Image 1 (cartoon, rainbow over the protein chains, first blue to last red):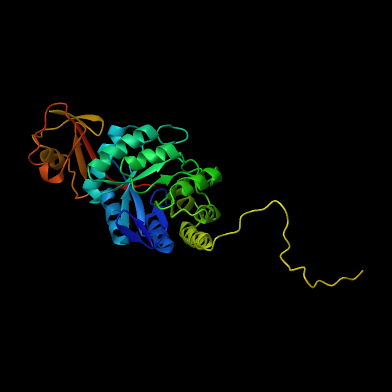
Image 2: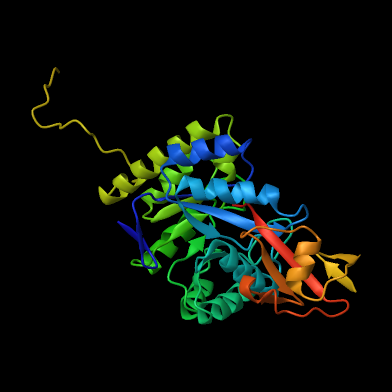
Length: 257
Length: 65
């Protein structure tokens, strides 16, 4: 069973709640994904709070754990304040920490990320940092107090899947016992299965499900792929080879000439 | 007094943060507030005195990835 900080979860899929065609479809996707953790965000309230109250109620009714994010924050100060405000609203110490460093790629500002992680950990937060696959940054995040890391596999929302499988493999090998969640860039269930086969502990998705033609069915497809990838990893897959190896034994083969 | 509320300048007659939320019809346990870059907890709003040109952020839950 996967443990994220002190919480044990069965499902290895974390689902974002943005971009779904309707609240009903979001709810159905959450149910069919069997996820136990959804990500949510905070934004400026302009209408007195009634619309956001409906979303807040929906999330509570789903009965899942909430992982608030600091999406859209471009500075340490913004990210830290947003995290504090998220804790006030959602009453959890969990925070998906994003400090965005680049407008086009939404690449994390890893320097700001480490600084914000240090500040938030000191304030009692349990930080889930959205980071790159850089090992040095990862080490700094651990020094800052993070006990879960969430490397990207491609830019957010790009649906490209793992663009650098070797880096993901190295990252996994370097932190064999740390919960690692691939966050961002997954497009298809086969991508999710691929990173799970590499030994990742879980996958965080949003656009790949919400943007599908049938989000609820895609949520279930991802759940199955993640389970299959996890099982395949535990079954120890073969490594690729350059040359053919006959699968049918040649001993006792008839000789006709 | 003049306040900058969620980035927009507004004139509101309010002495405390709780007054301001009530006057502007903000309600709900899901709202979070900050003044001049510092979180103000729900239970502290009634005792939090506002000053002219304070920057007030009022945030609420929304969908996120």
